[in-house]
Amino acid sequence: MKSKYEIIIYWSAEDQSYIAEVPELSGCMADGKTYQEALSNVEVIIQEWIETAKELKRPIPQPKGKLMYA
Image 1 (cartoon, rainbow, N blue to C red):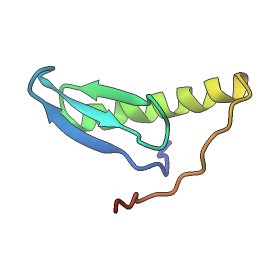
Image 2 (image 1 turned 60 degrees about the vertical axis):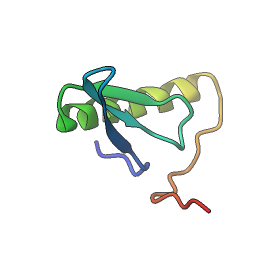
Image 3 (image 1 turned 30 degrees about the vertical axis):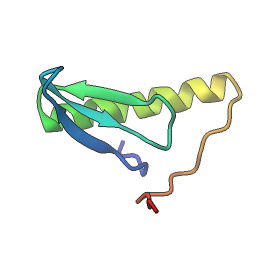
Image 4 (image 1 turned 120 degrees about the vertical axis):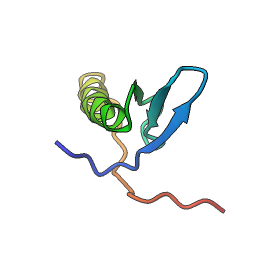
């Protein structure tokens, strides 16, 4: 399932892997040896993040899509 949350993917030389972060979901991130693997892994983590938030009755932010910075 493809989420509608913005995902930022970058190469980490320190970790020797791609890191995928979801800024709208605090602490939601994953890694992978390839760009595609990081993207696939973070899609799973997004669903787990949402399931956990529901179980804990915590608010789930609506996806805003593209983030804007001032």
